[in-house]
Structure formats: C-alpha cells, structure tokens
Image (cartoon, rainbow over all chains, first blue to last red):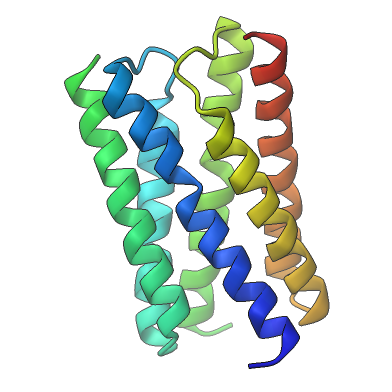
Length: 84
Length: 84
C-alpha cells in the first residue's frame, strides 16, 4: 500500500469514526434539540449511495467505511425521532 | 459520464450539501449544547485529509466536494466555540 492509499484510508477512518462521539453524546444526554434532522437524513441517503457506489466499483474501503457510517447515522436518526 | 460515475457524483453532492441544514439551524438558533465538538473536529481533520488525497490523485470531484464540506464543518466549529 503506497503513501497516497494510506492517506485515503486514514481519511476514511476519521470521517467514519468521527460520528461516534456525537452518537455517544446524544445517547447519553437524551437531547437532540440542536441536531438537524434534515442533515442526518440527507447524509444517510448520501452514504447509502456511497455504499452502493462502493459495491459497483468493487471497492472494499468505500463499501465498508460507508456501511459503518450508515449505521452510525441511522442510530442518530433513531435517537432524533426518540428524543424530540 | 456513465451511470456509476453519476451515482458517485450524487452521493458526493448529498454528503456535502447535507451539512447545510445543520449550519443554518445552528447559526439561526445560536445553540450548540447537543452538538459534539469532538465529532466536528474529527470530521474536519478527515475532510482535510480527503481534500489532500483528492489533490494527490488529481480527482476534481473528491477535491471540490471536500473543500466545500471542509468549509461547512469549519463554520460549525466556529459556531460551537462561539455559542458554548
């Protein structure tokens, strides 16, 4: 794996793992007043398309990263609907 | 442009534009209590790396989408620090 690929992998890990603190905070605080539902709906739809794109170009990093991100965004949407 | 490329472009537009409602909501409500600073810091760092990756592989869509997303995330961080 060359340096450019490693850079892309680190970027993918960060833009996936980045949602973990938000999910944890929202789950812990049970408060979603300041969270935009539209943002999470649009991001979730975008990530589903990225996942599909990853499958079509046979890219494991794109498919895997977006599968995990999709789960985190879906969990945020569940929390947003639960704690209005 | 084939169908797979169009799918990727639509995905990129959604995962970039998705942050606009959150930025607008936060700017309007001046409240960031429920927003995770860690999430936006990690996502911003990840997007900076994606931007660099886009430059290195000469991909205009990756570079452009992440430049715009980076600006939106940076603006969210400014709002988070301003409205604690």
